Length: 335
Ligand code: HSE
Image 1: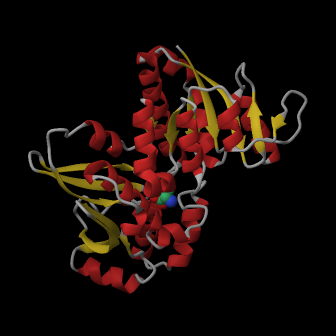
Image 2 (image 1 turned 90 degrees about the vertical axis):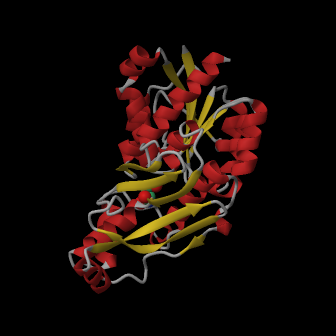
Image 3 (image 1 turned 120 degrees about the vertical axis):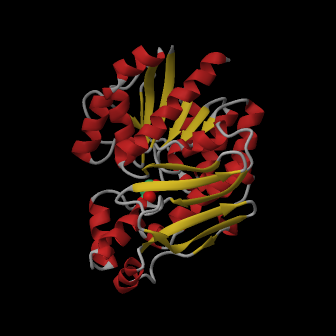
């Protein structure tokens, strides 16, 4: 089955998604019977739009050579259209948001109104407008999928939305931000927060504005999303969030002498979302390293369940996005 896809965002993550779609074309056809046709790609400069399908290799080359899609080449012309216009004018089955646009909920809603499924890795729309977005998707009977918003491709969202359906979840304790883990890990070796942040930025783990990581906002968005899917809607404004700005190398050394270390931990319970630095046992599941995330999910029937894996990174995030594109296609196919 052919599925028409509009991509929004062609930064590092957007291009990683394009690369996976390109490199795994044969795999996706053989394993899932799906043929993705990318009909538009929108970046900050405009929209590349070809109803017959864009050659992603060319699009990647244009972006990587000129820094933007609107650069004129012989074959491609971009249109002066942002996401709102592209959602309205481009005929597509799935709109894929891999931007950092804080107002993206507006065009997610427009996409659903237009009858398009939505796949997103963008966190603020969900952390602030979950009820509205999910309500609209249910009303229109369309997939609205967001695996990559929390723990990148490590499938905690699928686990919580599609598994454990007979369990009552009591609490989730999780390390959800890789940048702070990376920084705290570097500080364990005696480095400063500033030096460690610089390295995290070079590795492409930190947000464009890394204050969101340091202040706990990124983890707060993710914890809010976990609350929404597990216990019901809440917004980020209701989360209690403290970042790692006050943590010192000396504090970490002291914790280590007690067999512990410090991580930015999110605790999500019914009606409560707390993100704060906490001491965790060095040999416990939350003492993750590098770009790993981990969550302990406590349920009445199962006890403690641990999910641990990559929580940031380009191909790691693309894993979640592409999985959702496949899943959305199955739903569309079944209708
Ligand atoms: N800046 C985020 C992190 C990227 O460090 O976890 C993944 O959401």
